[in-house]
Image (cartoon, rainbow, N blue to C red; front, side):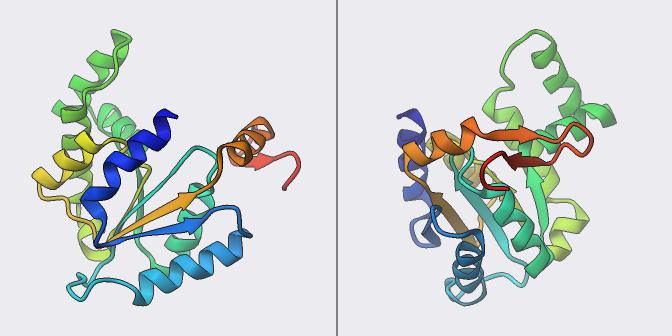
Length: 188
């Protein structure tokens, strides 16, 4: 599938700092493995603040693991969608450019997303607490561009889940109309 092709194009950029986790395990077992990796399985030149990228298909458990990583290490959780909406809401130059694309029904170009991510990661909270970049980059070109602008993570976490399980998880997903929190009809 396209998702697997994209992940395979990203991994070479992060192979020295990447670890693949079995996303079919219990969320607490996965979390224990991820936390062990983040706390002790990192390269020797780890910055004081962790700089983590987490990747995985939709319904692979990224959101759950992000919550647990933030709780354990106090890093700033960043999704590109949230960063994009914040720029648009603030009326920044980057936000205005992104808003033009969205109003025209076009995808926001990679270069603009990269600039938005770089800007967000340079903010004080990320500089002092470290960061957790959720679901980005999605392609090898985006990974290359991130490295090209100096965004170098200390860890890369990949949640690996077989397609048939992802389909089952997606089919049962719902969003609470009041809180917006995602839950599953069978598993929650």
